[in-house]
Length: 437
Image (cartoon, rainbow, N blue to C red; front, side, top):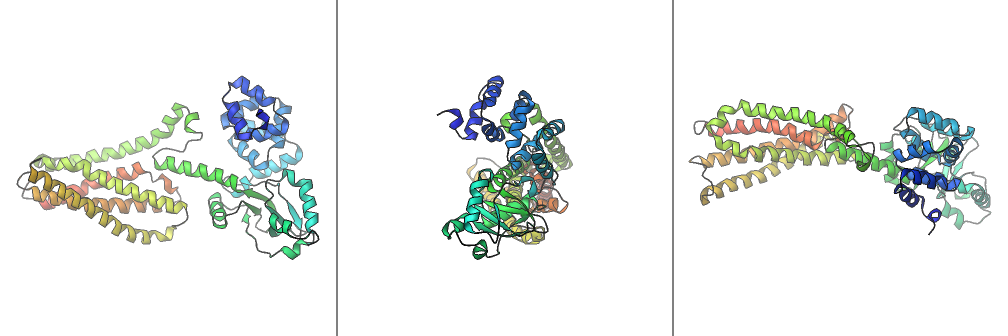
């Protein structure tokens, strides 16, 4: 199969495997229309390298043939000087479209829309619409729907192409209309737009102004691309790193260090408080060294339960299952969950000490029962505290306007480590005072 007969994504992948000079020459040899189809599939750094290898005429051809939504996405990744250079190469019509798209807020759905779609008037016949599709359909992003507008370009309905194909050619669109349609306004956030697409299960949705004027459409493939970016960034944040601008394999190691160092420093400072807490209870540890044996067990259980709760709540927030007002519902639910989980681990901890003591694997001394009770009760309270903390922190972050995903697993674990030690040694003082302490 010749390279020009392959899918644009496959062509981009094949060219990427070549050295820079061969890749740039091979790209230049593609037809004008194919260049514009392949270009969006390159990563940002490759795109910028290719731009530098092209002359003004060749790059202008690529830019003018790109779909507006793809061009906007590409321009967003370019440095300011390259954006200015690119926009100046566009023809007047495409320049106006590009500037309009770039002018919308960065997190709104209008940044993803394309003005290439099929629209019609309600007094048109099916035959007129089909003729219009044959004439202009090649540039349309999708032919799934035909958007019906009035004389002021206000959206009044959308019709599935299947409805037109099944109707007589002489049928007017007004006879097929039910005036029921779903649209998204230009200023709707990407997050809310994701939920609208998910709710109505649509391949494309029309974008209108607040006055209902049809200005473009957004297709599901563009939405999916943004959803992937969002979920990737959330996962990276939850792991205790800043979101990567490029893929892992394309990110320089110094950039990886930079993205991870900030959180590690914060967490390291937080863990210093763990050492401070241990130092505060130094006297108790010297009197009952056996208590130190269970410190890793105690604090890791609390951290794990907190990370579990945080991951569940953050995901539920992302899916719009939970709102800020649901915090008290979550607290009640997680209280009983944490109490049950803590009791299960506490029972296991008690049985472990009992078996070790009775079988002679380890001698905890004459107060072994009090030690077992201390560990069991500590696990109950620490797991409960970890569960409540992990589920509440995302709500606090959302309340102050931050991304709940920044409630990373390491952050929650560090918080519970410090407070868990205080809980553990406080309970130990209650049950072992006058015995080991």
